[in-house]
Image (tube, rainbow, N blue to C red; front, side):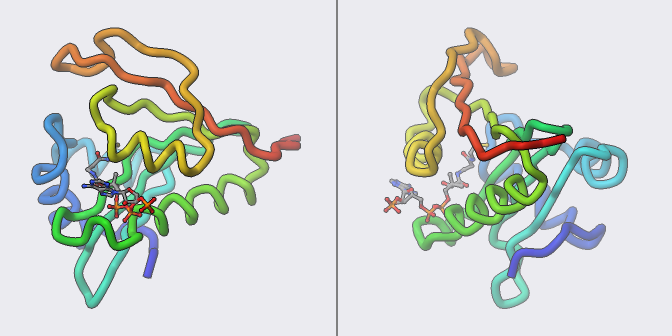
Length: 148
Ligand SMILES: CC(C)(COP(=O)(O)OP(=O)(O)OC[C@H]1O[C@@H](n2cnc3c(N)ncnc32)[C@H](O)[C@@H]1OP(=O)(O)O)[C@@H](O)C(=O)NCCC(=O)NCCS
């Protein structure tokens, strides 16, 4: 089940952040995404009462940006990442967004393969984009749009 994030999910999400990312979002960042970012659409994927993954995307008028997508290591390769991508794309289409963009580490081949399968195209390489100096690819997926 994909549902909006709630305060009691923050601990599980923070644990997954630490497990999955070299620069994890800390608690204050998660709280601020959840409570203070008016553009954030933050959802968790719950399976058998466990948080197996989550997605955070921003819808800013006519454009959307994928900020975070993650699936717990022991739940990967079972289609959950794809479920979360499907969900985001539907929400962005409903909001009449013209495109979705994202940044991904150039060496994150798993995520890049997933994004390419969903029609994201590399638009640019951002040198030293990440805190540790790694490069990031900017990828964009065009949508139908008609935002007014
Ligand atoms: C990227 C991520 C969300 C994919 O989640 P997932 O639940 O494994 O995704 P799916 O099961 O839907 O698989 C998507 C595709 O990636 C492939 N894939 C997933 N994990 C893989 C792995 N470790 N090695 C090789 N291929 C893999 C699957 O085979 C699938 O391709 P297919 O449908 O053509 O067979 C997950 O790997 C993850 O959380 N990574 C760490 C966090 C991260 O890097 N997030 C993205 C940057 S913000």
